[in-house]
Length: 124
Image (cartoon, rainbow, N blue to C red):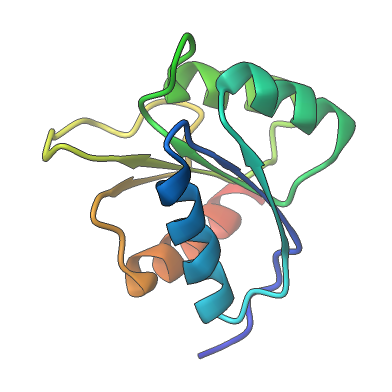
């Protein structure tokens, strides 16, 4: 499995176990990266404005700000940022604008790797 060349990843979830799952999957993929957690859209924007990130992974359902709204805000700050949105509940939705890849839970390591490869190729 090739080593991923992403170094700074912002993961935005309001449910901490999902953050840990994504962080652990990134480690299993061999991603030599610094993973930062944000628990809300507002926290993610504040963090993103201070620190540049190579990839943002966001939950579709956040408190006070949706993942779709957050993706638009991130792209307004730095349009070339790859964004992966994760959704669950078996709902079929179309990929929102400003999102490079839409993933449905449960997310496997293979799903995450393919999403990262697609998102980084799409956003460049």
